[in-house]
Image (cartoon, rainbow, N blue to C red; front, side, top):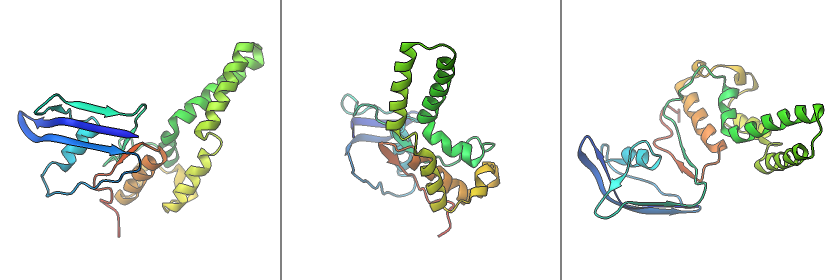
Length: 194
């Protein structure tokens, strides 16, 4: 994993908020961003995740990252609170779920009409499913929910029925389960009890 920003600045409403931004992150590094309220910490984090654009600083802006670089960010508020806890957490595994759906569709087609190409495609999807953890993702979810203090009966509750602290924990859990290359936490313990 590698992520680097050179010669960046951030402007909002025509005012330069941050300038001469230069930093890099490498695999396994942990960085804390410390500063006074209003000094631009959250603004910088929002630019890193793409919500605010970086601009050229004193020189040409350059952003580099390794292939398939995935940034994870804890949402301050979960958008669709009509989802059940189980539906929401499973979106962490969307790629695996999509492959599972393709496998099931192929099984139906192969059952009706046998074709060599379909069998090869099916075998490739099974390998990909296994490689991504398709046979163990539900167990990961169950263990993680238990460790975060959620009960089996909580899985079918809609998110709008959880407290602010529980929603913060779910947002953090969702992000951890999605296994990003870069995990950005902007005051992730807001709304949590000690």
